[in-house]
Image (cartoon, rainbow, N blue to C red; front, side, top):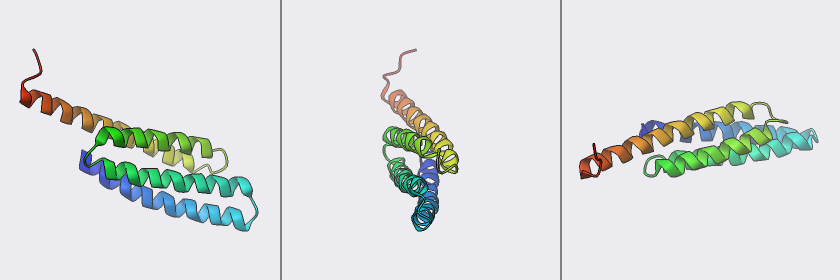
Amino acid sequence: MKIAVGIIGILLGLVSMLQSCAVATGGSLTSNHDLAGAGSVGLLVGLLFFIGGAFAFGLPLVSAIIFVVGSLFAFIAASSFTDMKIWAFADLILAAMAFFAWRSARGARLKTSGEVSK
C-alpha cells in the first residue's frame, strides 16, 4: 500500500499544482486577490501532496502527517477556490492509507521480532 500512496500522492501533487498555478495566474490577471491567494495556497497544497507521496515509500507515518497538514491548508483555501475541497478530501484519504500502511508494517515488524505477546 505504501507504493500506491506514494504514486497517487506524487501524481495528485502534480495535477493540483498545475490547476492551482492556473487559478493563481487567472486570479492575478483579473485582479481577484482572494482567488490569486487561494491559488497560491493551492500550490503549497500540491507541494505537500508531492512531498507526502515521496515520504510514503520509506516513512509512511511522516507522509500521513504531511497529508493532514496539506488537507488543513486546502480547507482554509476552499472558501475562495472551491475545488480545494476535493484536494482536501483526497489528502485525508491518502493520510488514512499512509497511516494504515505504517500500522501494518509496524505490526509485521513486531511480529517477526517476537515482541508481540498473545
